[in-house]
Length: 176
Image (cartoon, rainbow, N blue to C red; front, side, top):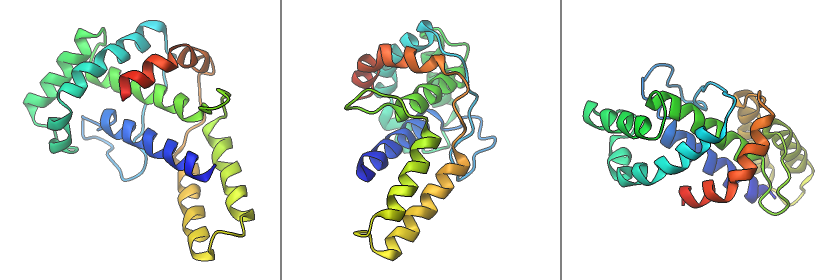
């Protein structure tokens, strides 16, 4: 379970980092990037899925740029976003973060959704009870989870869950 949660957290962080490069540079802090929670609709999700091909086409450039894309790369991202029905890259970014947030709570085996905050709390409980984890590791894990708890906002739009579930296979395929 712990490794599963870690993998999910890593995947979400990677997605948030890729999309949540916080392109404006404003509010770029070391913690999870702040994002606006939006009520998703079919168009948002389909646009996000369709945009992945274009984004993966410039993935190398994005990776090299880190969190400081040059104006040319920024313009490409804006172009991709507009091509797929978004007002701006920031809008697409928010949709990506909202999708990632919901995906993080969906159990790949059962398909059941657990609010990320509840999942983190349960994880903390499991770590505390697990006698096989060395004390030093336990302290570090709990510190990381405590940090995650502080930086994870509650899900604002519960209706996003069903929408993301409906498109889940397509989203996962697009993100591979």
